[in-house]
Amino acid sequence: MEHYDVVIVGGGPAGSSAAIYTARADLETVVLDKDPHAGALGVAHVIANYPGARSDISGIELLDSMKSQAESFGARFMREKVTGLDLGDTREKTVFTASRKVFKAKAIVLATGSMGKSREIKGERELIGAGVSYCATCDAAFYKGQVVAVAGRTGEAVEESKVLSRFAEKVYLLCPTTTFAVPDEEVESLSHFPNIEMLYNKRISTINGKRKVESLSISGQDSLLEVDGVFLYLTGSAPIIDYAGGQLELVEAGCLRVDNSFSTSVPGVFAAGDVICKETKQAVIVASEGCRAALQVDKYLRGRDRVKSDYH
Ligand SMILES: Cc1cc2nc3c(=O)[nH]c(=O)nc-3n(C[C@H](O)[C@H](O)[C@H](O)COP(=O)(O)OP(=O)(O)OC[C@H]3O[C@@H](n4cnc5c(N)ncnc54)[C@H](O)[C@@H]3O)c2cc1C
Image (cartoon, rainbow, N blue to C red):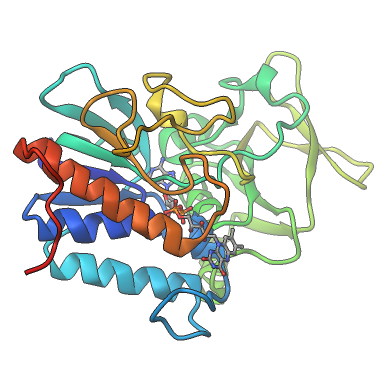
């Protein structure tokens, strides 16, 4: 178990900016991010409008530079997928990850963005836990010697296919478009995994099975793809808050409810970025929210009357 002053969930522009400010406030900070390439900034090819950055900078380059800046002030970044929170203890909250690591924190900032699930696939809901999964790191061992499919185009889908290939006999990686949203080297790295077969332009229309997953219907294709399980990493634009397990209040649109201090309905739990509702989704806006949430964390943890500006 690892103890920190602040755990930041999500290392996009909101989370990274929050980390710069909490680390500079001398708060022990860790940022847990499942895959920077899966976030909104991570998939953006060019960001021409971020103040002070080159106008041809890619989203991932911009993120790398924010991460380095936060690390230079002492923040740690770890590649971890957060799967659960326990917010019951008022002094220390608990964060659980897919790799079974447990983090304790006096305050949490949620900055997981809104690249959440896309529209539900026919048959998906009925077969959750009976072959439909969203976490290979959690469930891969159940598919030893079996045939599975992974649907998605993000780095997370690519990495989770590799995890599955250690257990399953065959892994079909179904990319819904003609390209993956990851650098070419990452796609090429799949050639070292002989039991992973990449199939492009494959969209699942129905997940078939009576008591468990048996096959997939693919749009525009007559034959069924026979599989024992399917792992879904198809991102839409819904706020990612599944790991909070209903412990935090939401607004009608499904975003986290926060007050003017970026505090959620649970004291000590703050949120910033696209995970909270906003009129315009822009990197500079969420970076400023990360900053403001972090200053509130400092105020909360240090028992200050007012937010302290970060300058000398
Ligand atoms: C294609 C595209 C192009 C864009 N172009 C521009 C542009 O040109 N200019 C501009 O200003 N804005 C642009 N935007 C908008 C901008 O990228 C977003 O508003 C911004 O990235 C949101 O930041 P965020 O930190 O809230 O979320 P994100 O950037 O989505 O980051 C969230 C992070 O949380 C991680 N995460 C999610 N769930 C978990 C979990 N359970 N455990 C651990 N980590 C998790 C994700 O992997 C991700 O790294 C674009 C967005 C898209 C999709």
